[in-house]
Length: 192
Image 1 (tube, rainbow, N blue to C red):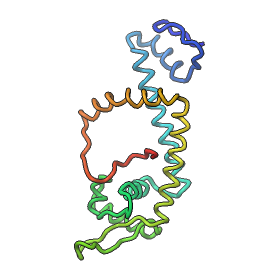
Image 2: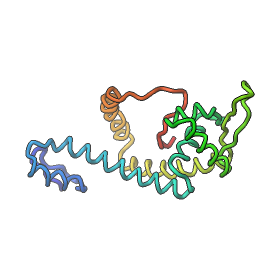
Image 3: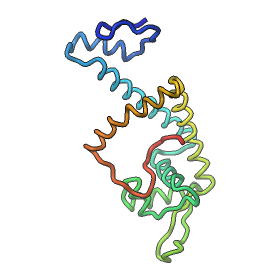
Image 4: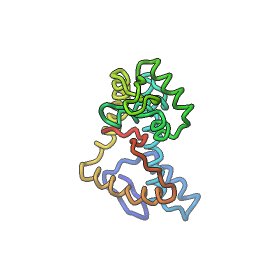
């Protein structure tokens, strides 16, 4: 059982590393808000955990993060999974020269191919191949499996509550650092 002076006894709550951390810091910083500290620290630890899972999942498919981001962008467009190099560079927030090098490397691995544009002979379109789709799908499934495992610690109602509770916080953060809209999907490792 976990006992917190401010909030009383929380029956049947297993303590985690954050409980011990906050308990230690509240003695050093008595004005520390334990609820804020616990929530933020847990979010940070979960993000770090998911980042490690992402790295592991990409390694299983021999993908670098920038390669995955490019494949993810193309896959997120839906069939026929095509975009111009300039669109890809914009969506992944890279330069045209960087995107050219990425497409070259991915094409060499058989994950994408260049096709002539049907609307402009001077341009090319980058298309995701079956091999690229399978590498992307394997990596994203590995990440998604862990996301689902973690979220299954909550009831369906709690998952909805968590998603809804995080929305106003994200709106505040996005108001300070707005994202640039574009027609291509964001580079999130989100599953599904």
